[in-house]
Image 1 (tube, rainbow, N blue to C red):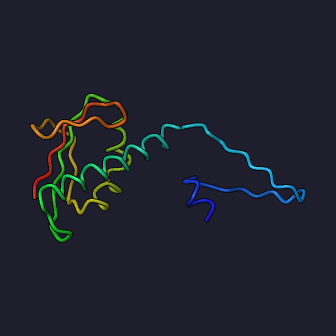
Image 2: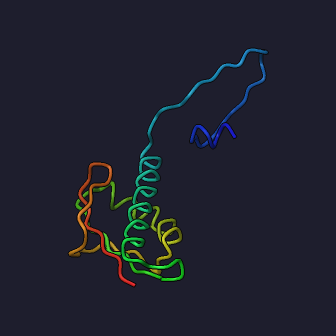
Length: 114
C-alpha cells in the first residue's frame, strides 16, 4: 500500500529500532526517466485513441518522430510496454505529419493509424 501510494519502485525495511525512519533515494536514473516518459507517451496515445473514437478492440500502428535522445531511447527500451498499453501492433520511430506534442520538454510528432 505504501509503495503504491508513494509511487516508488522499492521499499526496504530494516528492523533495527522501534522508531520509524524513512529515507528516499531521489536519484533519477536514465531508466527511471525513460519509464516516466513511456507512461506519459501512453497517456498521450490513449488520449489520441479516445479523440479518434477508437474502441478497445481497435488495433493501431504508432509513428513517433523526435530529435530527442530521451524519446528515442524510451521507444527503444520501452516500446513493448507502450504497444501493450495502447493496443498497438507496432511503434516506429519515423518522420510523420502527426500531432505535435511536448513530452518531458521534448518536441514529438505522433500519429496513430487504425
